[in-house]
Length: 377
Image (cartoon, rainbow, N blue to C red; front, side, top):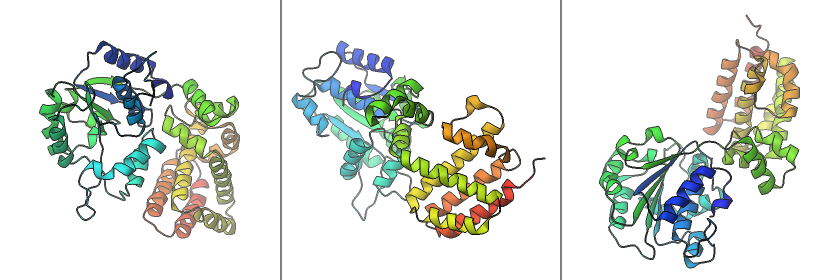
């Protein structure tokens, strides 16, 4: 991973390079900011840069032994710690017991969406956390000599998920590590990190990328035309993970948009037969795609309310979505928007729990008839 692989964050890149080049490394660093903006990518690039034996022009060479080890996630002076769901039966007690899934995550989903991690480790309804077992392993490894580099790194993803006992066990070693040991905490919700941990780090607050940076990223990564990237970048909210999602499902988004229009038009017209057909069509997506569609329904319903409130500066829609909203948005107003979004959310929860999707959707579409025909007060 190179700094040039990561869009934006120029000032943070500069500061991290300066730390490495000046050889004045803090004992603990925290990269914090919203999910999906490239924090873990930056942590990986920084550690690779520090370990590289032939870095030049502000980048790791990509060819030396250390760089090759980083490329294969096999550097002996780099340790990753991340939340898991512990299972005695499956002998999953440490984060390293999920190393294959972790490598898949770093390779295929480098922007690190927690939802994707939950899916890879089959977390189900359990909340992955960092257990005291991992904290004990960190303390033990930290006491050992470095293998090949002047610096040994412990990269902790989502330190806000540390068990209280685990966080307390790490306090002393983070405050007074052995010479050459550096902790890097990568946090999506730094306010939830134990204050006694957070106060021992040098913080780098990272923000969402600009729309121009997202546009450039989408054109370079996905070969989009400038007008396509301009349209879709509005939906990315400054997050690389969202840009990947939007770009990767561009055809799916068109399908979702057409289906949303059909559902709302037929609900307003009270065409029960068509709504039944549409519920069967959507149910045929399968659970994961259907959950994405319901998420899209919720988002576009909120955007229509904003559009109806005559606040275009707050609206995040593509041109084709706006064309539909010019006529449809008056039917999404203060008398029905909260209930409509709540019902869509309820449908999402029921589908996620493997309820019969046809029944859930048809019930939702019938409720939309009532809500759409409700007269504003």
